[in-house]
Length: 307
Image: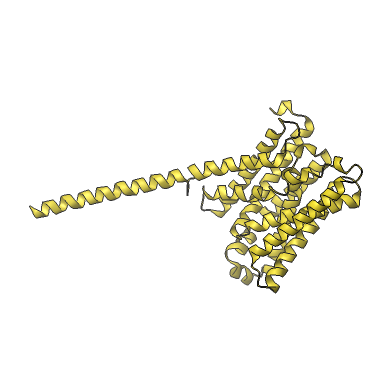
């Protein structure tokens, strides 16, 4: 199949593979921090920054647009924290507010840009649902480089991440600052989101972060193996969805990536070694059989004593 693809398309496949791996790894951290909605809020909050970066550059410049998306997403995260700490509004409500306001602002700016001369040909619409085919080699190298950096950071700081997530008090006793760890976590999460929105889209980027992590949870109780499996599921989903989207002209990449990730989830839900429905059914069936044998043996014993 790869022989039928252009050289640029093969690089795009590689970049979405690395992106999916990075998203899967970071999705595990978001899953255990119970911040699944945070990734959704930040991905939507990145849209205004993308449009503003395009307006500043006057053309499609991925590094400047990524910088704008990162600034916008970080601003959204800071506003969520500020709303939660300075009011009675709960975190999930604050996330919903920021998600809606920033996404609405992004759509408004997108409409304004598309009405400008040449704006409709800018390709900014692809940032809504993702369009990997619109990526040029420079975009691919930028996305791949940042994604590899995220994976590298996750690997070298894995022990610190684990302590931070599961035993923050012990981590604090070892000298790990919870504020610094939270800042690094949020920065890396934003990096994954902003580099992925061109391929997956702002609406569906959160799904690539969360679905592989949830799928991996059905196969293991080990956090290490969960991270590894989530990275594998995410990478396979990114590559499979991108490959399918190349079969049609103008097909958005994000929906196909999410469908591929959802396929892994359905298989994991049905056949997962730890919590899969088939395993639970077999365990319940074995328990019922064991209970029935125990009851039968008890009745035989009672009959023997009665005689």
